[in-house]
Picture 1 (tube, rainbow, N blue to C red):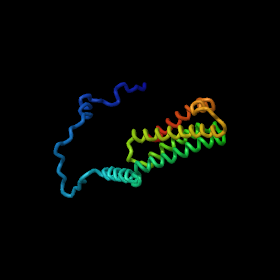
Picture 2 (picture 1 turned 120 degrees about the vertical axis):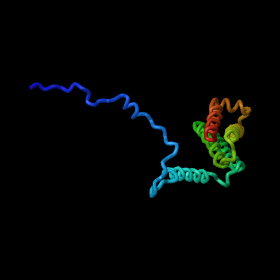
Picture 3 (picture 1 turned 180 degrees about the vertical axis):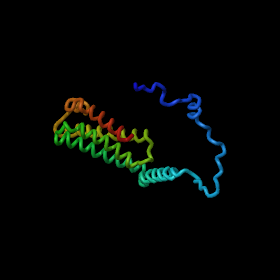
Picture 4 (picture 1 turned 180 degrees about the horizontal axis):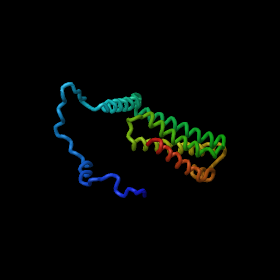
Length: 190
């Protein structure tokens, strides 16, 4: 006896019946009334997780607000960092003649000013004002440091003006210090 292969479809699909089965039924406008003894929840159980997440987020937001933060404190801290940065520029660039690290010191000064202002002022300063104050303080610190270098050069017998002295002794490094301090102050204060 020869073995015959099955040639017909394995399942018979009624196209009209399958279309009706896959159609979405509209939700009932009036849900069925619960039968006696049936309990229904007033809200879905997952709502408790949303409430817990919202409470946690609110607690974290409240915890990050520093009650001692103020504009004056932020500017004072940032000014202290700026003065330390200017002093470091004069000490390292003039007294110790480590001109290689002046760019790094200017970067630390700019970044430190931005961070100190952001931390000290907290939410009391808006973004643009904070960035503007950080830029003024950081660039002022570098300028003060450069003037300090010029004054130190004068104590060693220099007779050039500040721009001539800085241009001849440090060249483009001065402009790079301003650029690095400004960029890092801007990034840190945003």
